[in-house]
Each structure stands twice: as structure tokens, then as C-alpha cells.
Image 1 (tube, rainbow, N blue to C red):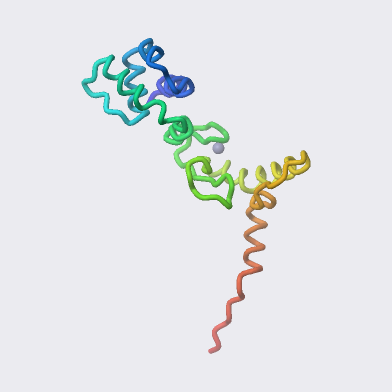
Image 2 (spheres, rainbow, N blue to C red):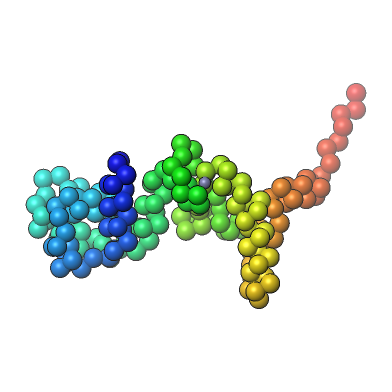
Length: 159
Ligand SMILES: [Zn+2]
């Protein structure tokens, strides 16, 4: 997808959800883009048909802006377009639901887990925020070292 298409897609996403009147003011190419974002088949549909089918679907897609950004190849921290993105847990204790995952380039993933989380934890704690995720308190490197201390020691084979 071209850069200007991405930009338009983002603009369209930001204005969601649309009313029928707002949809009627959009161009057919915008409507087709919205249809594709919503996984609606726009093949051979007229403008009126597209408006109808989008208005039926658009209210059910409140979380879509978040989801759709993940289908693009940019790192959600530095904004660079990268070949490889990793799924980073925001709150380590929680599951891999979409709301808890950031798509990051390897470098930002490392910074997020080793620097940003502990820094945010300390700053938020100092600001009086309570119930912060325990996984943010320490760099994942420290957590890994501590986990290795806790794990049972391997018994050496006796031969
Ligand atoms: Zn990045």
C-alpha cells in the first residue's frame, strides 16, 4: 500500500464510527477503503449499497482503529516501517489479547522491556499511582536472572 493510501486510511479510521449522512459524503474510493477495513466485500457494490452495508457494521467496530494499525508494518513506538515486528506484552501478567500487545521493532521491544517499563513504573509510583503491574518494576534482564536463581538446580550426572 502507498504512503498516501495509508494516510487516508488512518484519517478514515480516526473518524469512525460514521453516520449514514457522513458516509454519503465520502467518495466511492473512501467507501471501498472503509469496506476493506471492515472486511466487507465491496466487489460490484454501488455507492448506496456500500453506505448501507458499512452503516450496519461500523458501530460494531469500536476497537478497530487499534487492530488495524497492527496490520501495518510500522513499529508502534518509533514509527519506523520495519521488516520484523515483535508482539510485546504491555502488561506481562495479562494475556495476549489485542489490547495488551504492542507491535514493536526488535530495538524498541528491547527498550520497552528493559528501560521504559521500569522508568514508567518508578515515575508513576512516585506520582502516587498504585496497583501498577509488578512486571514493570524491574527490567526483564533482572527478572530473568531472578527466575534462574529460583529454578531448581540441575543435578549433575554421576558417572
Ligand atoms: Zn521501533
